[in-house]
Image (tube, rainbow, N blue to C red):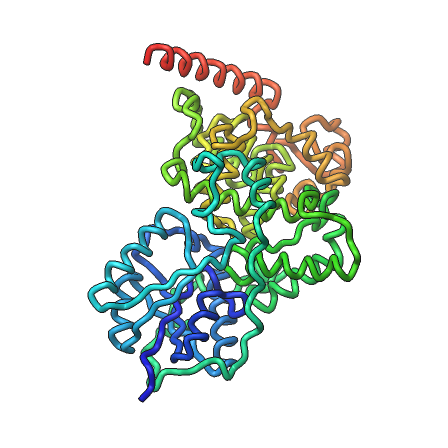
Length: 491
């Protein structure tokens, strides 16, 4: 008689290798039923944007193909996760559900509801930490309080034992199938129309899926890693790993990245340590974002620095629309925002520049920007997105000082030396050469005429003056600080 099967619940861990929940399920030597639930009733919005949904559809097809190659299948269900898992367990007589944990507030609630739904059937849930280097619930300061500052947090993490080596590569003989496979929704039936179609904006930059993520990592380590520290902020070249969407969908895990990096360093006899490695530090920021959302879930959408409770925002709808559509009159801002809308991505330096402009030059609440990014980013990650926006706004547990305001002109000249990035994303400025490409409103009339540009017709003038808006922003913050101090004194 065949033993009762176990269910492996896939979410943002769409890979076979380095997937601790899947490896543990296979080690049970029971039939394994892999399942993904498209949850149309969940509060989780991680994959609800146009780019992330399209990526998800392609990634699921690759995962399904990989499982088929192993002699298994991917079962797709749509609906409410607790109900679907309960029903699937009843249909298959499964006695265990294995899954990799998520730490966002909505996902923690979903996991609790799943446990509650399965308890009457005596189904055992087994959780694993497969998408982060460290379990955030195990890291505390000496006084047993959670860390609030990245520097201290990451310094502590670097003293910890490195994650255990990943399981050996999976083999098809490890996969045992149930006697009868349960019903599944076909991927072609899901969100018929635009959501799950491959679109041209993804293909030039990435190919979703586990195999592609490993190729992307190897390519980065062989070509760009050595120059990462110098080039990561450049917009005119690809100076980053471009792995963030693969990480967000769990097509590759950070432990896999570290192990591959270790192998490359051994081959190159590199002397760079984890403490010095800028690329590893960026993985550290990802860990820190997850740590903060775990220990301070209430601060996810609210400021941790209550000075901003007294801040008087402008919240101009015209300015917000201009920012969203890349029509602010500042070429580096507009090129970055158009890249985001078209591809779902921009590098981290540009994310900080456009966020600073929205919050500190336009005086629009940071939450509006975070919502727009969450909707459009192909690498949408709730924890990292909110940490980044609160860092710029100056209201996170660890954040940039409010008076640090990025100058779009300076950033344009530093990150896009010859204007090639702006030329790519703002074709109406394609005939305008450096230095005027960075500030077309200052170009002489004859230069604009030769470039066939009429300001406010072909391309807008700046919607705000940088220097004036900077002064206004600092004055507004100073007033908010006075009100905050006054309230604090009286309480």
